[in-house]
Image (cartoon, rainbow, N blue to C red; front, side, top):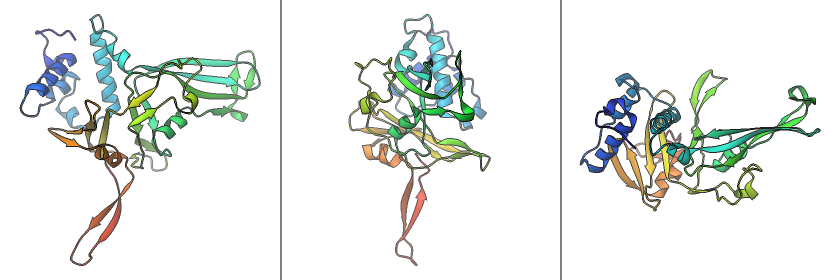
Length: 285
């Protein structure tokens, strides 16, 4: 990506990233991210606040996309991360259908009430019935019973799934973190069940089979916590944990099952009780 020597890394996200990647490759010790966060327009105060990781990802993608315009790498972010889905409303008793195509760079999946990624995708494409007081007003046909839903036209080469572990609890009038157990596979087949997630416009010759590349973990609660990542750069069985200045080798079990959330048994030893098992919620997931 073209950058110039006259740019300051703290004022240019592309240069800050180039500088960061260069240092990661050639430095003997860990590297500071201050230049990069400064290039986002964050000061020290912002750096210590807990930011929504999806928001950060979108800010980064948008800024990079913007800087790539008019250069040899224009459109790269789109080519990597952009997919499309179709919102539709279809009347049941008359011949009327309304559709709208939308693009996405990441998908937000429900965790609550879902046991795994497939259950979340099932929920994503679930058909809603518009009837009774909630009938759909169709052009030239008045109020009609209808069904409403979403289907996917195409998925991107790199699929980013954002799990909705933070949500607003209306009963308690506060944000909560959902630590429920939620499973994700090493391979995700989005053509399953005869392509039930795909719209009629989808190209059925394209194989939508994804291999897990990285897992981002949040440890902590709503008001504070810590992010780290498990990545397997070459898609071999060797995973690495990237946790601030420490990078360690990990196996697949650490990267997958131990990040599903849910409950775990903790065993205590003491002089007055030989073994005490407590069930505690996994805060890191």
